[in-house]
Amino acid sequence: MRHPQRLLVSIAALITVSSCGPDAPKQPPPPKVQAVMTQMAEFTEGVDTVSTLQSTNLVELAAQSSGRILELKISQGDVVAAGQLLIVLDQAQQQAKLAEDKAKAESAKANWLRYKYLAENGATSQQELDRFRTQFISAQETVKSSEATLSYSNLRSPSAGIVADVKPQVGDVIQQGEVFTSLVQNGELEAQVEVPAVFADRLAVGQPVLLSAPGSDTILAKGTVDSIDPRITATTQGLLVKAVFPNTDGKLRDGQRLRTRVQLQAKQELSVPFAAVTQTSGQSFVFRLGTFEELKANPGKVDLERLEKGINAGKLPANASFALQTPVSLGELENARYPITKGLQLNQRVATTNLLNLKHGMPVQPQEAAAANPAPAN
Image 1 (cartoon, one colour):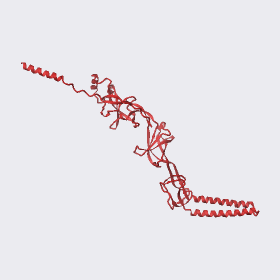
Image 2 (image 1 turned 180 degrees about the vertical axis):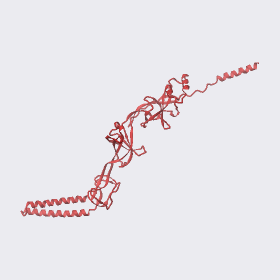
Image 3 (image 1 turned 60 degrees about the vertical axis):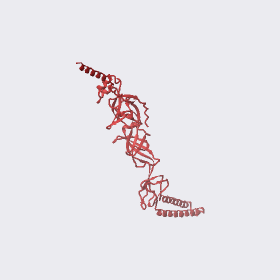
Image 4 (image 1 turned 90 degrees about the vertical axis):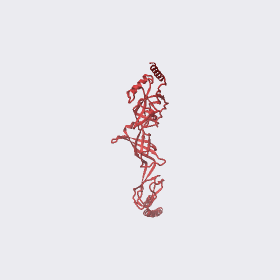
């Protein structure tokens, strides 16, 4: 009867030894995250549209005299200087007329000189002398007129510029007043942009306007708002804004169609750093750091009972911080910050590190990050 009793004692001892073994593994401490406060920052909103550039100085060239084109010294795209010869017209007829007018002037001069001699010797009246003098002066003016008309047969550029489309060809007859080409001066170009009237209080002369190719963010040129139409277009409820762009390098062209962005006056908006934002399935999120009570208001799939037991057991401090995954609506990134249009309030803490390892409702250990003052908008 004693042997079974010794067996029971041995088993009890084994159980006692087992219970005194090493403790179960401890849970890892909450992850550390750096956190910053949401704050106000300056953001420059832009209005994007597409506009067509126009030269602010476009000169139409018209013939000053009629005639057949003998020489065409220009073609589209040529760069010409002021006074440069562009077209030579047939001058034969005009030269013949000039020769005739000069002959008449010589004859009138001879008559005037003869009558002047006669008048000095009392052989004719002063009235006759005046009549021949008038004829001579008139003949001289006719010669000057013919010379001017002949000079118009050489069509010259009134200013420097780039030749646009040249309409006539050698052999064509051009009429006086007929436009044969235009000179484009691309040193400064203008764009007309329609801005929604709701932005009227944030528009001002001198604001930056940026040009880029459609589908690209690379800035091709930077100009400024030159004027703002005080009237609102009834059909579109827009304001017509004219912007000018210097083009000293000649890269922009008259008639070029480009993406145009008018940068409005900066305004203060709630913001978070770029590093605080994550995206999932097209939705932007931040991990806001909140209390257990805030977590209870939006628990999601979190086991609140387990967390509460942990707090009650002292495994989590009563003031523990929790990562609250919060959907937000963002504006455009500027100076490494996002404007927040929906989802957060001022002076709320958001995590900026360890985001990929965070889950909604996870306890965290906040480490205050040194938040740089947001740079003012350009």
